[in-house]
Length: 106
Image (cartoon, rainbow, N blue to C red; front, top):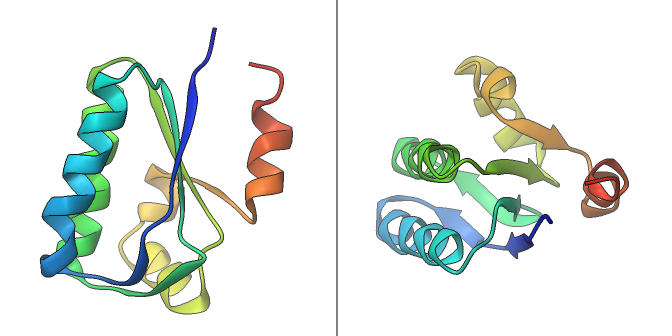
């Protein structure tokens, strides 16, 4: 049975928040979550440290056999994902509702 957890960072996801973000993901995985949705609707900007934290989170979740998806990205984040090809690495949903529709079968 899937255990879905949501994570919703806010503001700027940069080096000052990256470590905390990674810790939160690690905690969710340790608590048994096997599907994690990172809702980025309140994130205004992501720098290279933030992107690194997202990639580290993805590796943490996958190494435990889980899945990580993101949703509700703004235009800046979308451009960053496209420039770095992260849009091919992460499963990106338009909204939390779209994610829930896709995962309600699991």
